[in-house]
Image 1 (spheres, helix red, strand yellow):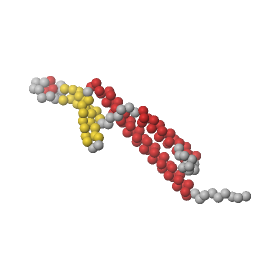
Image 2: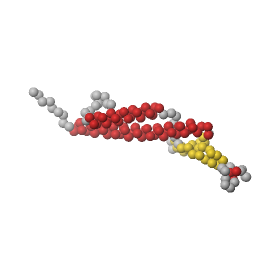
Image 3: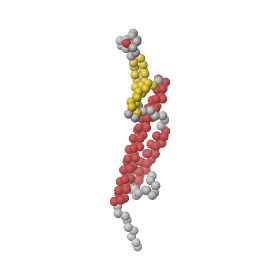
Image 4: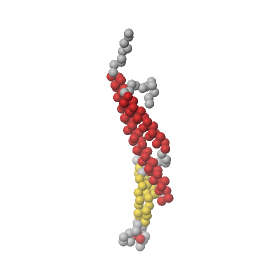
Length: 138
């Protein structure tokens, strides 16, 4: 919530909505802190054909070599692809899932922050549009 010096008069419904949005943002921040290692990209399963004549991969139907797992991602405008060892698959998949959660949480944070900012701006406009109340002297 805003400090008292920056707080403006809110309608009860607007105050409730502001509190809901602030709590949502705090939950998102906690969820972001709980994320583990991150890795962008996608994982694909590859089967290859070798160059050895008479190999099973040349048979009809072919029995290709694999599976091999390939991680592909683009970072800072550069596309990269790396093979992932079978014993590392579980770790890489967790990292990919954590990255996907990061993106979803950041999107949710932006949505909530934009709504909160709009609510606060609307309240400031309403306050500025209302003439100040004069105190009646008795």
